[in-house]
Length: 146
Image (cartoon, rainbow, N blue to C red; front, side, top):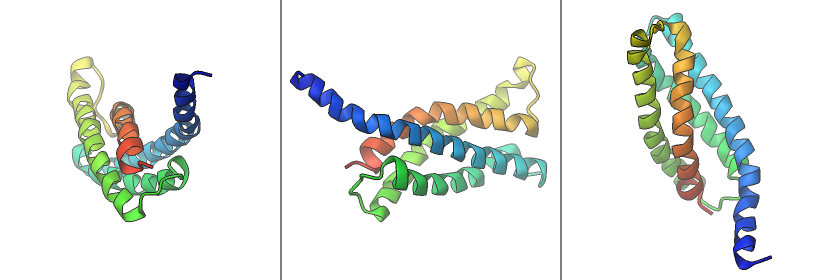
């Protein structure tokens, strides 16, 4: 095995463990985010653009706890420091996520799709999917750096 192959093996081992956890936790966060957004808009009549931030905040805290315990369990970063950096990465992810979500709401009628509460989970999924790439690398190399 060459030096380059050995280095790739060291990097690849954590990825093989981290990626499945990150995806599963992300899906859980999506369910929390989309469900709370839907409930606030559908059951309580909250504007869809205002229903999203509290849903995202709840999903962020839950996902931090799960990612800390499972995805990035080998981190040596203190929980306080990791949480602050996690929130910074989430803020960047939220900017991407919310922009895509708002664009979906704005563009849906132009594409002949209804922008109803029933469509909000799909729009949340679009934003979450795009932001997933930003957040994974931010968490791995900044929030939970080892």
